[in-house]
Image 1 (cartoon, rainbow, N blue to C red):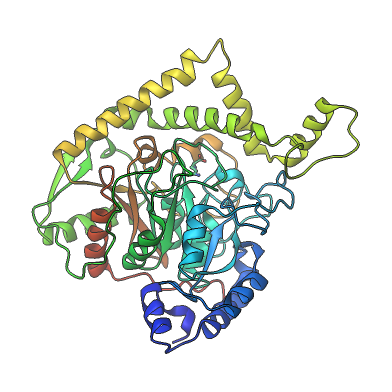
Image 2 (image 1 turned 30 degrees about the horizontal axis):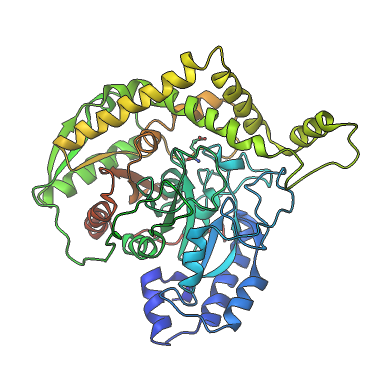
Length: 480
Ligand code: GLN
């Protein structure tokens, strides 16, 4: 077995006992990247020199010597950070995102910054200014998005774990498409400081890995109170310790009544039945909750809010402060126009325009303010539901990963496909995207949702499911 094939917790043991060295592991992962990257295109920026400089120092901490990659909307001091947009040019942030600082201090070694939909807007990784990433399980298909590069890198065995961000599904959906585990933590569980904002009230950083235990390890490092993020939790630290024998005996796990009539691709419907049975065998009680507002209004509510927040957040890219600029504009207006016309891609432009309309003074009450009210109803609906059940089990997506290019024509269809992920962000809840098995060589994922701050319990439930399904294999990465 090659070193890159081991999971995170196995590698931390091997490194700690000095059975392997950080340089050996680095070389193994680098070899794997060199073998597959031409097929997959997960990277925007390779940071080998930075990694080597890290390896030349004495690394300490629980991840000492473990390679990782970061979605390219996480700021890395002195290292180009693009959010997959041309508008950031060769911007090198003057500071590290807190989540990366935590990993760096725990000894993680940075292999690179990876691909995503521009400013995290999309669910195929096809909205990147750097071209699409391919799914390592079938390179003719999308890896999902927006954190497609992070999911692909973990699935192909480049690194044992990665960070992404999830505003409406961007960790859970690519995790499911690529066949890895992904956690969207409770809003406020991980500091957003240094995460390039898309929809600030929805954005959350979280991990990808090939076992649930590995997610627990990463969460134990990145879930800290951070005074630099005012929405970060302030209570005592959460306990992500791995438990070999968790139990869900007597716990209630609900299906959403309103989702029952919705069409699912056969492998996803089959996976729902399989996981229901596993949970029942483990002593859980399968029930039903009703989420009528979620089912009917969540997609519209999410896109109204996300676009409104995006148009405000992206106002700062004007060619003055940072990133791409033009030197020969006739005046400030021409400069803004030229910088933004060239710098933003079509999806980002259309969302900025939509966000401008939704918040424009004469329409604001009718759209933006109305959406904030619907959001409150959605949060209340979930809170009622979690009075009746411990977890909710549901799909991540209605369909299996499409072929590259296939999904790009119909934006509305893409938005609607986020129905199962985005309500979780509207209510600030944690959501675990977990592997259930393969159908025709493609991985099939599902989602477990819990009440706010139930992230540790959600991962315990994930461990139980993984015991039955087995962990995913490393994808072949298009290697013949
Ligand atoms: N697909 C959703 C969107 O485009 C979610 C993206 C995300 O979670 N960043 O807004």
